[in-house]
Length: 459
Image (tube, rainbow, N blue to C red; front, side, top):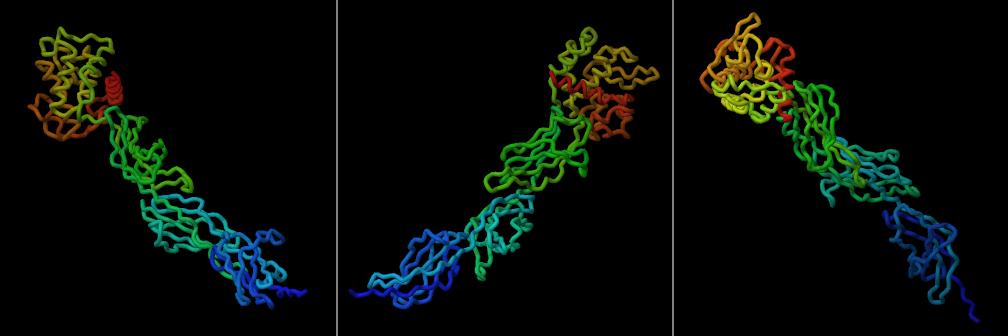
């Protein structure tokens, strides 16, 4: 019988990293062989399976292209003689490992000029290289290189509102060879733009309405308020919804000035962490009640306020003076106020306050049709007398316009004291400017008027 001689034992020289997904196994030629069997396992001492056979006595390398980055593999090689189907002994095992890719775990907008990314730790990493592009595929440029202990990077060179894509590559040393993991999967987001407030407006119901422009990427907006432009801003509300770009502040105090800032905010979703843009520039308004402007109540609301007082309308006096009914009186107030651009609710509140709901009782009598005490003084002067309700209301409207505006009268002047207002023109643009010697001596005059105006609007 012919005795078959097995080829000599092969010996692996090295396992070299070729790429993040490739390992090259090389060995010395073995006498008597014309090929080699390559085996692989994920453990050193067992579980080896054939991954390929290499033909040729001097074909002494094999590139494994099925490796998982970061995973450790063990290789064995044995020589073979394919003609006699005989094998040499297994070589001693040798391990090989590529560098694992990292994974970006979060990306966030820290402000309108700052983006921050975080990533997963990789064993054997020496540095993490951060790349950025304005497009998902291609155009990536290295913007930072960080030592292995750092796995967070804040990008301070972003443009507000622009979308960016980030990748992270790992570099390290394995068996004395510097290798790279290749790029992580890209992660993208944008630095949320600074909100632009379009308007801050005092509404007819004494609330303040804030409006702003939509910010791409925002899921909500935070509203901040202060009582001075450079003061301490406190968050007063959060408006949910990317498309909701307005807020009504109902907790304002009449007479105060308020400033507002709005900040775009993004809730976390997936790897996008919660974040925000810069607060908007401050924009403010006064909650003081303007005297000039369009009337915001009806004649019926005025009448309801009067009736709620329990007083009776003096129709017997005013029938011959052009206002035989309460409704007619209120309609005259609205018409005369409109002529001069004064809010009728302010005029009617003055009428109710200064005449005790047309009950008078002081030195001015109902027959004078002087509903704001024009010319009356604390020393007993009875004041001006007007021929009818319309003229009396017109004089009051004109006198109040003299305080609230510097504009000329639209109609013929019937106010006998208008000429004395030259030094006071425009000194009381708001109801809150009245009182304390300005129109009236009562320091609480404005407060009393506002109580009546708010009550009027409630009907």
